[in-house]
Length: 554
Ligand code: F6P
Image 1 (cartoon, rainbow, N blue to C red):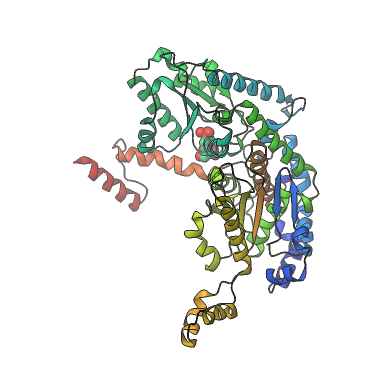
Image 2: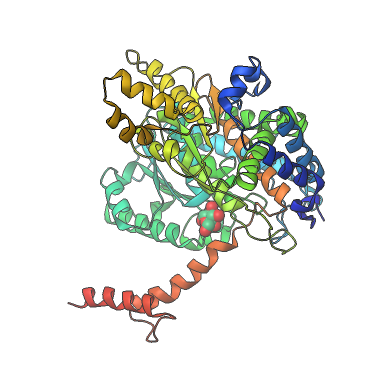
């Protein structure tokens, strides 16, 4: 049994108890004061690796906190858990599978055994097939049914078969090979299909049906809609292979759908959906940015893999982020965590990290089935700066909850417009500064007096102007969003999430919670369309079914 499947209750560890006691001592901890007292604080709590600079000095920690958190990681067995992950142990206990997304970014010559078989030659074979395919499309050799080259690629997939590829292909738009546009169709909502189809021409469009299982409702429905649309636009069944391909571990189902065997790229059950952008699920990325840039992406993630495995915990970026998350979630009562990218190209990173973190760490039992006795994964939310500043940052500054935030910002812009980038960067820094410094009652009053406000008004207004401050954040700075740095950034969060699950003893690689809704969906659908006559299990659902049917009758 892998170490991470052990049944340690982390809250019983001596290091956990020590952290709880230490937390009480930090009740009066003031970030303003510790910065004033220690000119070295920024240097002490920052690190630079894999093309990413992490400033974690604006956290409610001192060196003792870091020492205790590192002690927790050690006592909880994080080091052997990391070894298990990379060695292909069955870290996904409930499904009895390894989680080997890291194998996908390993260099040629490495060996990774699954059931005694080295999977690396197969990984390299698939990468080679992707490379050939990308070459054919980019060089105009892959032609549609009217012999025109492909101009548009539509990825039909959802969850991990959508969010990662979409994040990366859009983040790396400056690296895109102009001439091939990538689109994403995920939701079952007919409107998304309709709006997308209106922009496409069937004769120059290639659909990639991207589904590990090939039995995901939304994806199959969209794939059927795409096929009907293609036929209605003038395409024929015999030419279907020029316009439809699949990435899936379920070859039979893809072939039953009508996709030719040579148009199916494989996936493996040892790669989880939300960790799959590094596999052939990343084909739309490679089609957008070219295979060498795709390999750079893999290389960047590999650098982070190396760092995660070898850096001592107190200088290990994913481990530090994981421990800070545990510090706030388990010792300060934080229930959510904001991801705030200050970069247009990274605008989708919050959505990807939402699935990565919440599907992985939204768990209530440990690997052995016993309950988690402390809070597990937080709600991940956020969005692109500065837009958030004019929307939800108010709650970050003055709401009653403590919400740690990660600011992510590049130093340089691909598209400098006047001094916009300086302003963007300044906004990012000033938001984390405002969260930390806040505004005291005395400062609020002084500010009002300086504006000539009379004493009564000062007393009335000051409480509204006070900002508590002392709110923690990390700032991740990268030079520019490049394939390598983006690979490292995504892998950083993958490992953060895994490190937390290993410490809590949970399984980061299953997602049983999403199944119930899918099961119930079958019954609700049958009642909506009238193929099931019995009433729904509860009055609310039945009432809503009747409301829907009532509107569709007339
Ligand atoms: O329902 C959740 C989920 O299984 C995710 O974990 C996964 O990324 C998504 O659905 C899509 O699954 P598939 O690639 O098999 O269509």
